[in-house]
Length: 481
Ligand code: NDP
Image (cartoon, rainbow, N blue to C red):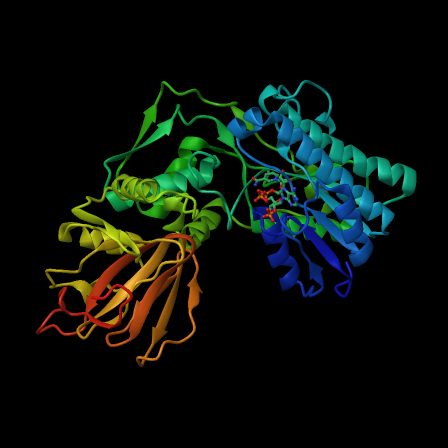
């Protein structure tokens, strides 16, 4: 690949697309073009053709797709086949129309027949019936491979297809209703550790074996194949090794540092006994995976934002106040916290107060990087969850004997801070962001386009006279206090 040429990554905000972006940037590509699905709906033929006519990308990575777990695949069968067929047909055809030099299409291992022997070789494609639950998705993906081959055969287009195994890494999905096994295990063990739960329950025996590839390895393999592979057919991308789910669970437990037990819910079924890709073709082409599973899990666990995965709350402006308070209450109790009191009737929203006995766990969970020593010896740390309503704001205030540490744990919110009474420009806070408001620093929290959930803890600055509820100066208050 020529580093000065233009690359279009379709699906750049997804797990795969974002890994491809990181890889290409590291390799020195700086002419990368992207569009979100809101900016360019790839199901829209005319919009895609206009985009290609205007941009004329030299290389295309097609990593945009409608993806999901078994439940989503089975429930939204029509959407899975329609969206994916449209995205592939539009992008592949427009790439051909507009002279794209090379295109890579990303499929998935579910394209192989349900009863195909293991490990899965590329030749097994279309040799048997598919798994019925995700047949519409698989048919769409097989169509993508066959389109690339057909355009190569008829027009000589250099379009190639790759089939990744199960992936994990940055930007994974931790919503337990939708997530794959590995992120689900990471989250379950982490939450059990924080809550000091005695055990973690696993579905089934844990004997089925699966293969896992770090998405940065996938991106490295994709780059390698863009450089070195120019043929029809597909190439599997995996590690060539699988692991029993129970051993994977033990590995995650170790990495997370959870000391409890693993228990099995044997009323739940085990899935397919084994799913492993044959990576002989990729190996013969000269590429093998470099990130070991344990190393990969460790880096994911260290870097993932463990707070925002826990909320998954609908914080849209349209959510009624009672509903927002109820889901915030459920969020706190699910994490094992007790709600000591709450106030739902502040003009700007309201808050939940947690007992001081929960303060340490609260800090460990929401502010894992602070030094616990700063909080020792004080009887009141005032752990709270603030709920700021859309477009509302709190008073312009400060404190003499404490700083406050805040973290946005759900939705969106903004802040104004200043060292003088003069207000400065407001700034939006991102989900997971932590801010420390120093003693004396003027500040105000405000709601933006939806509800904002902010965890708050006090950090006392005067050990001889710890801060209290009276320690607040309202420089300017919309509510006449
Ligand atoms: P994600 O769901 O993380 O990302 C999919 C991306 O596709 C999103 O960024 C989204 O864009 C974009 N997209 C979806 N619909 C449209 C549309 N109508 N128009 C424009 N863009 C759209 O998926 P992954 O990164 O996990 O998967 C990418 C590819 O890799 C898929 O083909 C998948 O089959 C394959 N794969 C993934 C595996 C995995 O374990 N994750 C395993 C094997 C294969 P936006 O964010 O802007 O809405």
